[in-house]
Length: 189
Image 1 (cartoon, one colour):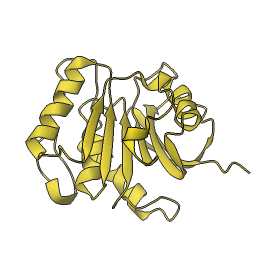
Image 2 (cartoon, rainbow, N blue to C red):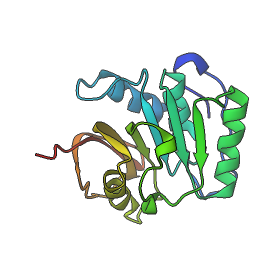
Image 3 (cartoon, rainbow, N blue to C red):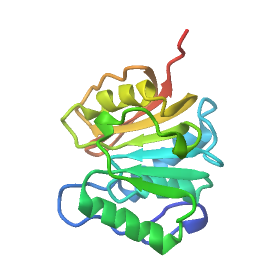
């Protein structure tokens, strides 16, 4: 597994050992960022505030930082995965513009004020088949974690048809066993 674009292109990333996480493939990540970077409804990656939920190895958030995102918060419960994220952050020396939180993404609560402005680019790669995405998407809005113009990228199993409360699907892509929904925050009016 490697970073596929930006200033850390081709740098190797470590993934957590075992089968509890399934890192997004390099090819799928490259395609995901092509959609994000070319969509006129998506805020630019350059300068974005990113939250990577169910972060696993942190590859999606690291990819965003490599492409110019200003900050990334990695949210992950599994100790093995947090260790992999920490290793990747240390290797790439991303100390100043990343943080790692041990938190249940379905129970985020209110965004702490010490995390700065709301996030405008969200990655969610929850375990397939547990309907965690819809609950997390709701919690992001309820807890004021995301900006009004936020875009979320939700990865689910190819056969899943998740609800996206508070979000509108703009693009849906399939990559093997995965389906990726590119979501724009729904207007409040």
